[in-house]
Length: 101
Image (tube, rainbow, N blue to C red; front, side, top):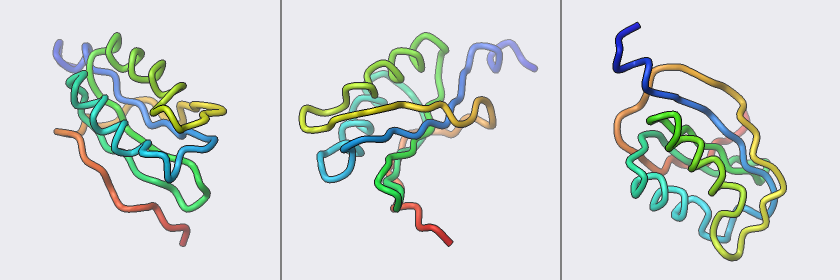
């Protein structure tokens, strides 16, 4: 592993509660990009929001803390890290809703 890779943390998270229809994806995009994180965010068909955050460990931890509140109209019940690691994405994007197959 390179020295640079040692300084990057990449997590996949699921945010549950009242998180759709309350500006949560746009808020996530704005917050993550303002913190300089790479990754993506999308709604899930089950009503949750899923995101990947990649950056310095301290900044990723800050984003995870901010996700517990989200935008003003959100009511987050839980933020779950579902995966740790993986290839860090480049940039931050909003993806289409994940549809169950």
